[in-house]
Image 1: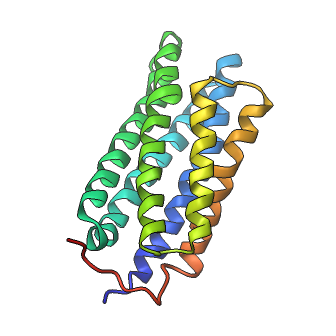
Image 2 (image 1 turned 90 degrees about the vertical axis):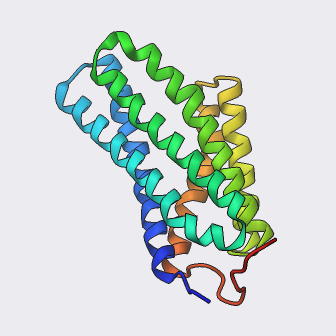
Image 3 (image 1 turned 120 degrees about the vertical axis):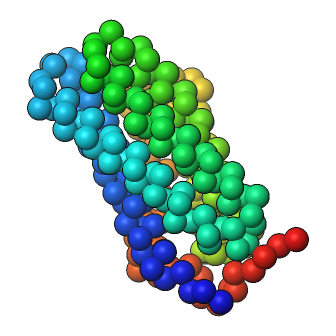
Amino acid sequence: MKSYKKTARYTGTLFLTAMAASLIGGSLLETTQENSTPIVLIAGVTLEIVNALAVLGIGVLLFPVLKTIHPGAAKSYLGLRMLESLACTAAPLSLAFGANNSDLRIIFTGILIPLFFCSGALVLYWVLYKYHLLPRFISIWGFIGVTGIVVLNTFSIQTNLGMILAFPIILNEIFLGVWLITKGFKPKNQLYHIT
């Protein structure tokens, strides 16, 4: 059996990179809507593209691990991560090419990115839960977090309640990243093909 220790470490690092780049980059881009400073805009766009690359990297790195267990889920997860990465790239670029495109950014950030992220997360957490790759509480926590994001985006919540709904998945992905770096996948379980 392949241990996938390096894969787990790299994937964990990308989870943390994606989260940091997304939170900081998104915050910087929100400030540009009020105060259009070119340096802030460039920094925000750059961080959002770093996030997009990390998202894609997570899908690519996890593909061989998931393929060993469930080829269909592996393909679905990679495809959804690719779509999410494209949307994460397009969202900041729509702002960079003109203020009139802020409505277009809302389509990416309010519809497409949450759709692809939540769909991909559900696939990942289902596989992690069903095949015991990680302790099950991480997957359950992930399902709760995804539910918060679905509620947040379905009802377009812009108040502090929105941050409360997003907080569980933010913490989950940070915890997941740290877990993968420090502990990796559950060693007592073999990765195997399903038929």
